[in-house]
Length: 445
Image (cartoon, rainbow, N blue to C red):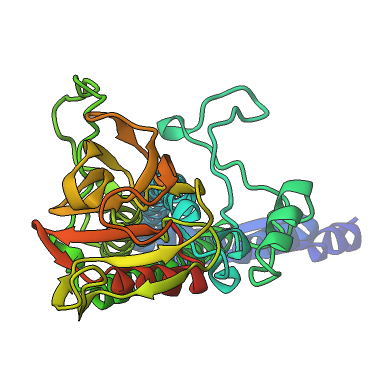
């Protein structure tokens, strides 16, 4: 019995607590003691963890809070940067749109300018055609190169929404019929631009402006080519008139007496913009127009200057202008004209346009017709067998005024022909030679 109790006690764990005179012993089963001893380290670790948590709780919380704040600031900075990028892109887009609209307006203005210049050049070319010398093929405006101007026209986009400022570029394909024909007329000097290519729009607009610049240079060349024949005509007429003893600057087209009333014209003066912008084209156009005006004026004056021969063909001159022995008296005398030989009753034609101031018998002149051509010029046709005009009649160049005869102081049928300047007789041969020079130069009234 005793040994059994000893074995039971041996399986129990005894813990003795002593303090001074106090002493107490606890006995617990071995399994519980092992479990308690195993739980004590866990409890110690738990206590240590709790202690660390409470000690470092504020630091961890501050660290986490600071990290959250930093992340929030980073996100806000990123959002602000993206917002700035968006605003910058928006401003750039708005600026690009404004620049694009400005370029479109500039292109439209250049298109209007080219059209106005083309119309002006065409009008000048039409005017030069009427005064161009017959032999001036090298200066023929019809042979001049045509300008190849791309077109700008309003059009609607595919989505039906209007473009900014109401403009849209209608850029022709370089392979189209219009562009091809224009390029061929320009002598292939301007290569077509393929606006359906992958070139950026800014590059295509730049190429378009370059094309307009080439058109401007072509316009200047055309104006120079238009001015050249006008200057040539003016120079030939001035030279011929100077040989006849006349100053071209003092001649004007006499008014037509048949026009009692001038055609009504008027209205406020509005300068043509393309001629008042101070550009090189405006200066060249003014010069070309002045040259054409001068040549046209001189051409209009020519029919009123007696430069032709009053008889057909190349009549023989039996007596020239100046001193001679009078055929009736045999003494020296002044012959105020030239005597031209032709068959009796041959037609005598006015050598310039004018008004008949005298038509009838006039002493030694016999039957005589005098025509006033204006600018102080007049001609006389004497010894006529008959007269076909009356005083006050308007005659044109080549109008028959009478027929060759022998009336008055004449030894036989011939025409006494005089040219007078301000009432004084001058040598008609000077005028005939000047007219022959103009005919040779293909400049005729």
